Amino acid sequence: MMLFLSLLTLLNSFSPQVKIENAWVRPAAKGMNSALYFNINNVTTKADALYKVTSKVSELVQLHATVKKDDGTAGMKEIKQIAVPANSVIKFEPGGYHVMLINLKKKLKVNSKIEFIFYFKTGGKVKVKATVRTE
Ligand SMILES: [Cu+2]
Image (cartoon, rainbow, N blue to C red; front, side, top):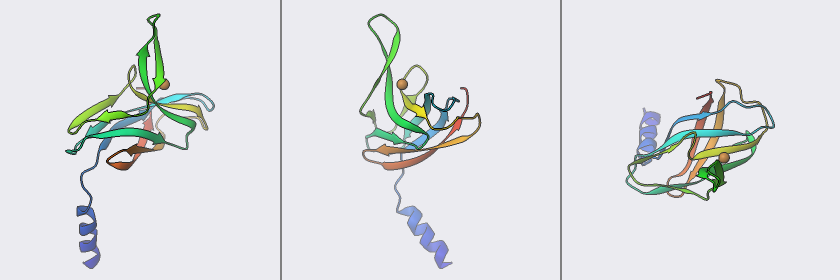
């Protein structure tokens, strides 16, 4: 009973956190690149910003935006952070924002789970498990 009560106290001390929903990664071979997609759901009343994502799955993990180049084709560039206003959903999806996984250390097999840590300016660290799938 004491344990149960202290657990409740512990849970109540956490304020609502920014949620990462529907996280998925494209399958790819070892040594190749891939991308992580998800929705950031800021259910809190505070503005936040995602500034870093880490993982052991690849040599580099970067926040990318898709941009239109002068010749009309699509390219991408690294971004320092992305704002997540209070009570908003920001989508990372094909053709838009994505987390680039550069030089994979292992093959990403369909249905396997990959762990990431998301870093938010206000909300701190959020652990995320993404599923490998094609779309
Ligand atoms: Cu990219």
